[in-house]
Image: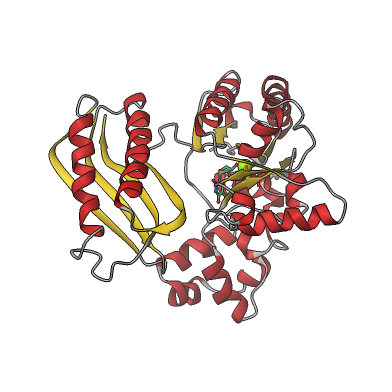
Length: 362
Ligand code: TTP
Ligand code: MG
């Protein structure tokens, strides 16, 4: 078989970059997209920050209150305060679709892996040189049309291309030929391997394993004993082995949204209103999707002490676009028990709620 040439494209600071170029006066400013900041008293998290704001130590998943304090500290040092913005999902989805359209002009097999990540198969080009040219064109066109940058990695499989795209962000293009894969992987930190998260990293660090080269000293059997099936996967990943094809069909498993309250509460009215807003949003996304029906509704409740519960309702006949009323009713049925003794006997306050539609049917 001819060698595969696979590219991975990941937008740089996606939500924040879009905001930066969408509003006059924002260009070059530190920007944070996430939940409400309330002058540092907000309780949600940062979705993402542009690279200017990252210089202040602000990053994805960080509590928004900490991001605000970091920005205030920067201000004390004479730097510009960060601009905090809410998430405008619709806008980002629109840009994401435009990016997909641009890639489609050059490539036929594309797999959208998330709102800002795409794999595409360039094997048909035969050489890395030609692959590089096409990737440059795609990068330029995205820059021209959307005014934002991305990073692209190219390698002999999805694993290598994804890792390569993440090196030297932003606005990077890195090609790793198959013969150079080991040299490329060995010095990297083990966390660069998709699937090695903070927990697994800790386990390895404890026994003195920091880099992929260190990891390669463990046998398949040793890794399997340590981590089971996951360990075997890591054994192959660390050697740059990945046969996963680029598949165009991305399986959407659910449509959901969640929100953290400004203040912990058990105020029925307030909670119902927020649930109504969330369900409206989620239902609207469903009506615009390619799905005609869903069979399961799941709600998430996180209490003030962070205990998190989910509750689901499966409906045999399913809910279609015309069943909005029934959908709202079903949500209420799910929510009620959390407001009284049935599922909340200690009357704990609630800090976060979420709504998710599952078992989507085409
Ligand atoms: P990422 O590609 O992980 O991050 P990014 O594009 O902001 O930055 P980078 O340059 O490092 O790629 O995620 C894409 C988008 O997904 C991001 O812009 C916002 C959203 N997101 C969250 O909402 N929460 C998160 O914790 C992360 C990691 C991302
Ligand atoms: Mg990104």
